[in-house]
Length: 521
Image 1 (cartoon, rainbow, N blue to C red):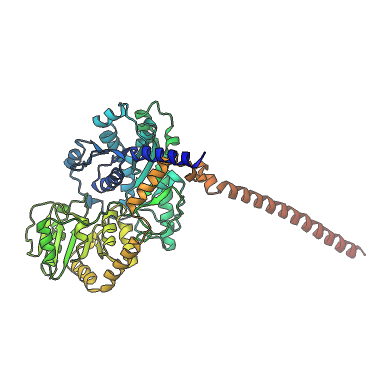
Image 2: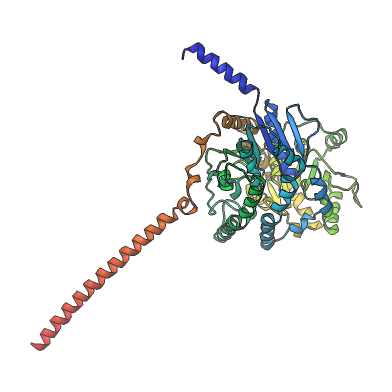
């Protein structure tokens, strides 16, 4: 092929690809923080010209023409009726185990009924639409992987809070419990012997329950929804082209990843936007700085017990700093003059403001990432899930202080706030981490675009697939090899023992014979 033909073919390819791929993004969980991450992927891909269809319970306002939304209507209303007090999930090790079993027990059925069987989703499945790519979160969503084979599309998953057993198994990523802590435990990558013991046992129990109890239920939902699937449930789980992780080694820990597992921590972080006028004024006119207090999108601050809420209010009233508190009610009894409350606040834009000196948080992955991106120190009040681990890592890195929910009192709140505000090492460590986090060759959005289009260009990119995916559990951990080694060692030991006995008997018999001869003589 001559040079002119190559140029012509290249131009044709570029024009066809510039038209954009048809992408289906699925956010079935119905959790606001998870949906924020999913929407960030969808907006990023739509922003470069791809035709994106989004299944979501949180539709965005004024979407672009190439950003179509299939709303999971009624899902949020049903969740609101339950009005769950998530502070009740706060507790020790037993509570953690109970929550893990709840995730594997009740939640899959709830998600299947609310999302997979939704009329709008059913209508899409029965349509003749075609998609080139399906992207969805890997959190309790295994039956939804079937959308990829249903539409004959490539499959990419993402994790809103980093790597876990659910994501690692999709691409064969190693995660030894010796230094990879289970995300629901308050451990870091440096564990004592007791912590490594607990982490190993907890990880093994998690994997066993996941494999033998949880997955069969998910397989049932997969078979029920896709009875004519070309790929079985197990085959589809091994046919994932790429996994994106909402984490970064500067904030978490270095991890050994296969090439199709990509960190894009901070994908949801945009350039700061102008604040609403009242917030802008409140922050600008704070000569002593501002404390921002938010317990996330799922935890309702109004559920904080009255005595603990009063402890915060009493401490806030004595501060020279102003306080912004994300609070669902319109007002709080005994609200001090230096406190502003709102049911919703633009968190990233607030944390970007130079007058914000401290972030009081539950330790969710989104909030901690945004806080560190802007170099703000934290006080962490973890409640459940990965929050304990996120705060423990932050404490060990020196930019956060832990305040246990059970220990909240006027004295502990005052001590925590004054410690972080008056000790410059917290702010210094936060700024240092921010510099490390920001120092990267591409933004998370650019990284997502590159790798998604790489998968599209190369037909799912089988060249990225780890050979570990073709090994059984015994083979992957070389347990069969170790077993044979033990058998060989055991056989050699038996042979040596047999030879030793023979030699011993021959030597002993010879000595006895000579002794008898001497006595007879």
